[in-house]
Image (cartoon, rainbow, N blue to C red; front, side, top):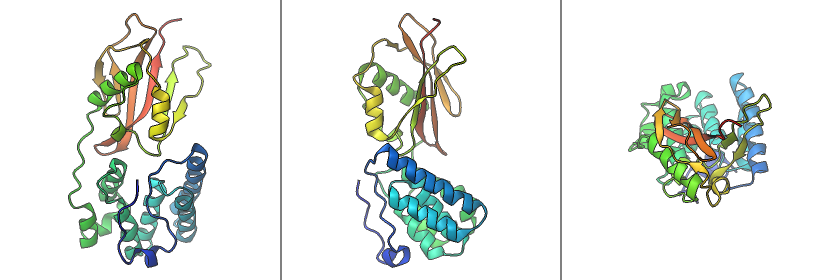
Length: 249
C-alpha cells in the first residue's frame, strides 16, 4: 500500500525518513528492524533522546512498515520538545486503509508521552474522525475456524497485523512442548491456513475473555481449535495466537 501524500513541510522536518509503506517484507527484515527498535527503546527509557532517535530512524529505514518504531520515533520527538517533528510523524498514521494505524492513534490518545499535546489543534486534527469499530472477537474466531478448515479467509485480512506475528501451536501434552511457529503478515497467514484441513473440528465458540476465545470442546475429529488470542490497543485487536488441541494421545 502506498502512503498518502505527506504534508508539504514533512520532508524538511523529517529528513530522509521514508514514508509509511505497508508492502510486505521478508521475516529477516522484520526481525532486523525489530532489533533496532528494541535498541532504540532501551535508550528511550533512559531519556537518551539522540540515541533513541537514531535507532528508531534506522529501524524505519530498514522496514518502513515497522509501525512500532515509527510511533516510538514520534514519541521521542514529543518528549524532547520537538513538537513539529512529532506531529509530522504522527500524521503519517492518519490513513483510511490501515486498522493497525488506527491502533497507533488510539494509543497516542492515551499515552503519557502525548499527554501535554492532546488538546493541541494539530493533535486533534490528526485524531479527528477516529472511530474504529470494536473487534468482535467471537465472530473473528468463527471466521478463523472456518478458514483453518476450508482455506476460505473471507473477512479476516483486517484482523491480521501487517508486522506482528501470529503464534501457531499444537498442544503436545508433554514437557517437551515445542515453541510455536510464527507467521508474519497476510502472506504468512495464507501459508498458515493453506487449503484448509477438515480434520480440524468446528465446535463453535464457548466463551471469550478480554483477550482470548475458547471453543466448545472436543468432538470426534483429530483436532479442535482450543483457543484464539488477540492483541492490540483499545478495541482495535488482531489475531496473535492460535492453539490447536489434538486430544489425548
